[in-house]
Length: 367
Image (tube, rainbow, N blue to C red; front, top):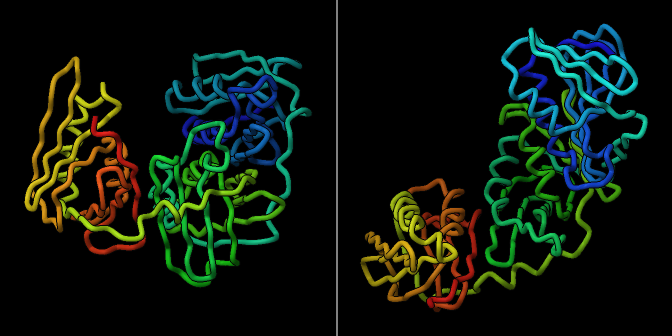
């Protein structure tokens, strides 16, 4: 194999495919990227056994062929090279030579015959939306996805569509994020749990926000395919928890605050709160919210801001990072916090009564 392609496009392809390569496996071939050259383009594919990410890019192909190169090594080298053309040449059965100008790297490779091909997907259900809509909806909830390896069913986002409403739900049991998109004609009804890793890979597709994409569900998988990229992943099969039981049915207290002011004051208090599991105490009255943090080593912090409240006298503690994450998807200037008691969950949403996004946060102990 002998190919030449621009470094920028090559790096984008290997870094995207590298999202799927596994660094935590004893199966060596899954730690590599497969590079296949034919015609006037190359395919770069990464796989961890459950997800496949493929990128295609135009290239000068002088000799066709395929190789498998360690993924992290290749990404790191490609990232460090200056702009210009990169050339890859297989030198014998076990090596590939990567050159750019005076830079030269001789890398060990594996036989591509052992690299697993992407399985079939789709055929049962489909959803069509713009990449911008997809990115925005996923960004609204993905921060709440669990990373606990023992809770596989919440290591992804539950996506459901009933013909007019697309709902995305994520939870790590300490918080719950819900985003809804009302749009008829997106496709067929579907409910599936998509791994967070795959959602991030789809978000990074090399297209603008107005690009239309189609999520195809079938055979226990979901896939997206275009001329320049393909992503296939296994769906999570365990039952998703009954998240609706976590959402408070009613609230007796509310705080309405300026989003940016609350965010900046929480960030400052977090400088001290990092030593105490990010615990911030929020004490409200009818007109003022006091935010306090304490560290045995650093000292105390207090921040204050004006608010409008309903029965607002309450003291409650939250993880400050969770509060910042909950504020990020809210685009409007105001937010509302709906509560009942200090040890009951609270709902963060837009003050403009936007029901399309909300985040439920479990409180921390006041001690």
